Each structure stands twice: as C-alpha cells, then as structure tokens.
Image 1 (spheres, helix red, strand yellow):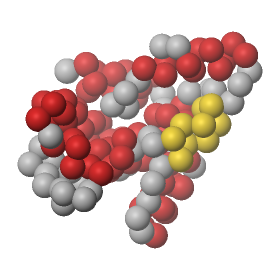
Image 2: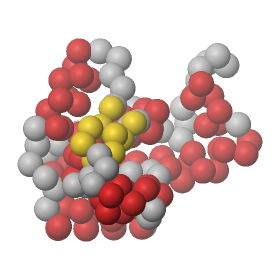
Image 3: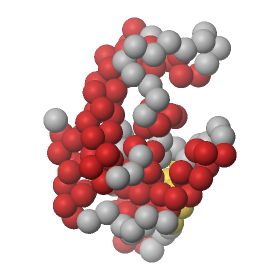
Image 4: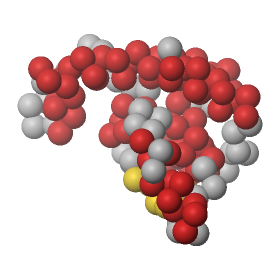
Length: 134
C-alpha cells in the first residue's frame, strides 16, 4: 500500500503474460503493522533505523500519516491494518501469494485470517485509494 509502483508496470506485465506474482513484504517492513508512529525510536542495530535518518525522515513521517488514515479504513471494515494490507495485495488477480512477516503466533494467525477474507469490494478499494491520496 505504501509503494504501489508494481501496479503501473510489473503487475500488468505479469497479467498479460499469465505470470503469477509473489508479493514480498506487504506490510512494508512493519510500517503497516500499525505499531509504529512518527515518533518511533529504533536501536542503532535495527534495520528500521534507516527510516529515521535525515534523508528518509520526511518520507517516513508522510508514510506514518498515511498509515493513520489506513487504520481508519481498516477499522471501518472490522479488520486490522495488517489484514487490510495483505487483503489489498491479494486482491490483484495476478498476485498468487503474499509473504508477510510475523514475529509471534498472534501475528501469524492475523496474517492467515487476511488470506481467508473475501476480496475487497470496489467501494472498499475506493476507500483505500482515498486514504492514500489524502
């Protein structure tokens, strides 16, 4: 959801060629987990610390504003933000598999539940699009 560039070239290419697409990282390295805010602090050894360096900080802050809007959409649908992100990715007919990360059993169960949700409706996709465009 935070990087939709595959929709512009890769996914149409795969669709035309009948090629299955595997979506790696649909939770954007945890940004779409819902647990981070603009004020997050990471250990210096944590790979996520690069979000906070000078050149990436403004992008990260904008992404966290988007995440807040997406949380509202997820809540309206009665699902979690990670489930919305995974379901959104799986909604594209070319995407065969989404590979989200999980650090515990609860996260794993939530991720699996997302795969079992019905496809997003056009109205639900429009709500996501509005949240991303704001």
